[in-house]
Structures are given as structure tokens and as C-alpha cells.
Length: 474
Image (cartoon, rainbow, N blue to C red; front, side):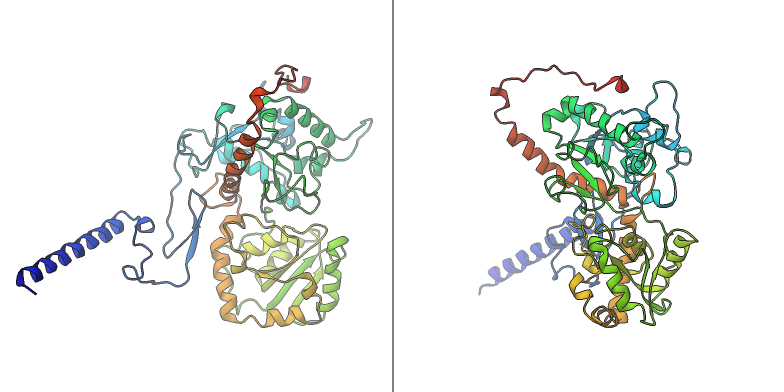
């Protein structure tokens, strides 16, 4: 080999090496290593942490990374928002009027610019189905100048700009508060509101144009919207589970599962360790249930005599929530067993208590499971297996300290995804729900566009464009 060729090859090698070095340094200095071409190469970036942490970015993909990227809240505008939402200006009786709020003449919404002065949602068990309350507050605050929140969903006043149409009805509170007939009433207030809502939506051009598929309707309480759900079944429903719905009305293709708002206090950073949790497994609640919930009484008979398992009847009365909070914090595992419906707030109480959930509910649907792997922080047991003699006890005793701590650490990371807050914060339940809605939009838009291919050739059915339903809406 000639000296000249050798010198040329050395020079070429030197240039390539410098180019690679410059690329690596550039990626590092711009803090965009996750997006660099060689970021996943073990030759350039050796793995320094085998347990990846997970965060949700604005595209709502779950990103494994060895370093959590902080995305600071900032004022949002329509060009940056992930989701553009049109919210119907329904009269206050459908929403904040139920909280005792009375605005000025022709005022539909309360002033939410001062979070400590917004109308309060009723406490106790009402809170577990308060999801629409948090979402509406978030939308109302999205256009306030200087208001800091994640740039996920933003309210738009022009329906032509909207990705989704939000129906602001406190349906769960309406069921809890107004389902009974009083005095000379012929129908309950809850049914009256549902009937008026259906009439209103059926007259809207926005509903008719997309067949309701691009509408977002809250129905988190399993018994909410009983009268309206069939008429509004084409919409995207906000649900706790599918336990009391037929498949043609509610399914994973179009609907969003949202976590219950937990009723016990969050344990926060003061999370007891393995040794500080003397109870192996904890359950306290209604034991005698019907249908799928009958498994509870069978498990009670199997587990009631185990010395380190707490399995007892309990209610919210007599400091029930306080006792449950203490019991979960002192337990390694918390049993989440199917009741009258596949899910309950007990799962989310366990998550914020950092008590590893044991899910015994074959039909359960879980919030944002397309981006969260629940097997990393939950134990799943089939109902038939759980009823085998000593099967559940052997499974739980077989999980050693190292494996339990792995799930416990993951619980501490994901617990923030199940916290409702106002103002909303990056990665909280409000942020995650908007992300789940966004992930449904493309399929909905495709469905609407495909079915409108020949609309221009079809004759109009007439009837005008009246957007009102009754005197209630003016």
C-alpha cells in the first residue's frame, strides 16, 4: 500500500470520526437525544439504567427514557393545541347550577380565572364520578390570557374549527341528586334534563353532520344517562367501564375510559416500604354483590381466616374512608374484585396509596391502557383461578420483596396520571384523558369522511336548520 493511499484513508477516518463526534455533541447540547439518529445505539450511548421511566409527551406516546423530560406549562394557543374543542353553551341547570352557582343574567359559565374561587363539587362519594367537572374547568381556563396549563385541549368558539364537540352535562351528579320524583312531578329532574339534552342535540347541525360521532358525552356513573344513552350512543362516551352497556352503544373503538377520582388521601412521597406494610392483602367494602360480584363472598370464605389478610365488610359510614386509607397504606397488596360492575374507585384508591393492586375482574377496562402497561404495577388474576383453594394466597406469598418493590416504584411513577387537578398539570388525569380523546379522533374523522362521499348527490330531507330544541334553550 502506497504512503499516499494510507495517508488518505487516515484522513478520511479522521473526518468521519470528527463528524460523528460533532453530531453526538450537537444532540447532547440541544437536549434532543431522544430524536437523534444514533440515540438508541449501544455503541454511542451505553445503557446506564435498565429500569426505564415513562412519560407521556404531547403526542401521547409512552416514551421509554433514562431521563424524565420536563415540559413546562405555558400559555396555549389554537395553533399549538393538540385538540380543539367546541363546548356547547348549555344553560347552567345542566352543569354548575347543580352546584348552587348562580351567574348574572345571561351568564352561562362561572369565572374560573381564580382557581380557589370556582364552585366546589360535592364531596364524599360524589367525587368519584366528578370527571366532567374537571374537564369543563380545564376547557374554560384554556383561553384565559396568562393561565398556565398543558397545551393539550383548547376551547374554540367557532364550531367549524373543532375536532370534537363537548356536551357539558354533569350527568353523574344529576343521577345522584335528581333521580327521584318529588311532589307532583310526573318525571324526575334527571330524566327531564336528559330528554331536553337529546332534543337539543338532535336539532344541531353539528350533530346531524357527523351523526354525533364527533361529540363527547360524559356518562361516568354506571347509571347515568340511562334515558338518553340509546339516542346518544353514536357519540364518544366518557365511561368508567362497559359493565351496563350493550356493545352497540359502548365499546373501545369509540369510547374513553376515565379513572374514578380517588376518595382516600394520596400518600405522596411518604410511601411506606415493604417492611412498613405488615398486611399482605387488603379488602374492605361490600361483600354481598349480585351477578359478577358474587365472587366477593366466595373469596371472603376462602380468605377470612388468613392471619395477614384483611378482608372485611365496610362502608363510607363510621370513618370508612379514613380506615380504608390507613388500611391500604399498611398493605402490600390491595384486592380489586369485581362488584355490581367490573370497576370501582377502589383500584384508584390503591394506586394513590402505592398499594400494589390485585385485579380480579375479568371484564374490567382500564384507563389509557394503550399507553400504560398495567402489568408493570398490578397483579392480574382470573376469577376462576382466584376461587381455587389457596391459589391467590400462594400467588401473593410467592411475590418476593424485590419483585414487589419493582411494582411499587412503578406505582409511584404513574400515580400522578390518576390525580385530577385544577389547573391541570402535565401528565395528570385531565391531561391523560384529553390524550385518549385525541387518539380516537383520526378513526372518527375517517368514519365521517367515508360515509359522506355521496352526500352531495342525495336529496335534502328538508326541515330547515333550526338549532333550538325548546324554550329552555331560548
